Each structure stands twice: as structure tokens, then as C-alpha cells.
Length: 88
Image (cartoon, rainbow, N blue to C red):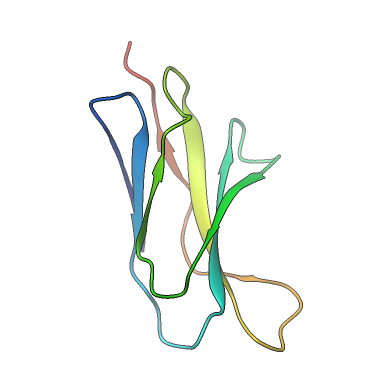
């Protein structure tokens, strides 16, 4: 997989991904409670390879990242969704 998620001391999550070849214009980070309904939580520059989700405290989410490429209307997934559970 090209995606990793781990907890932060403040309860948030760090999401990191491996940048695949190509020239994306942005990366779109999304999360979901059920892996069916996804919410975009950030769009980050193409030079980014990580994002901190500071609003995840106390909740469990699946995460995924999309590369948005010029001339392609639908962003391309290049990661698997990863779940990170809130501490018990």
C-alpha cells in the first residue's frame, strides 16, 4: 500500500503517502466512517506527502488519497483506504 496512518499525541492522525510518478496538480485527502460515504478533508499541493487530520480525535476513520491530474476530470486513486481506530 502507498498509504500510512498513525495516531498523534493530541488525538489527531497523521496521514502519509508515497508519491507516485506523474504530475498531479493536487492531492485530495478523504476520510470515511464506513468506506462508502467519503468526505474531502483537504486538498494539498503536489509536493506534499503527508497531512495531519487534527479533527479526528475520538473517532475511527478510513482514509484515502487521490492524485488530481491535469486534463483528467476524475481524480485517480493511488492508495488503499486505511482505517485508524480511536483509542479505547
